[in-house]
Figure (cartoon, rainbow, N blue to C red):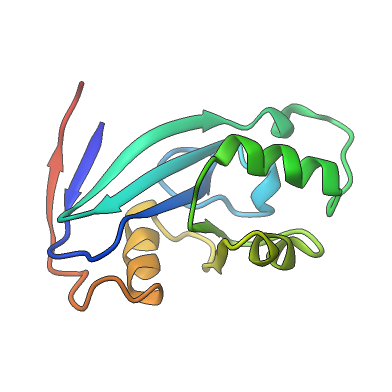
Length: 139
């Protein structure tokens, strides 16, 4: 389990990050990521709750913007407040917004750590997110 101390955070957040390598945000469509990392942000911590292998990434033939694929991905993400990627397929941002989820689009090459800080700033949950201390906890 990954924990990261960030200072005071108000409400609980859950954020899904699209990634292929577990280090950087996926370059490309959210729905084509190899994995989704689900982070819980509460009290003073960012905690990696789950790593989910994306079953949709293995399909050789798929159409970007396909509603069924989006619904299947949404069902595996669970109760998240925001999603992070570098790109969304046609209608992807509207799909997430319709379901009460904030889609955040970041530049290619962004690390997951930086992406989470940007998400916290964007969602207004922390006034000083860059003043951090890392703690790695293995369980």
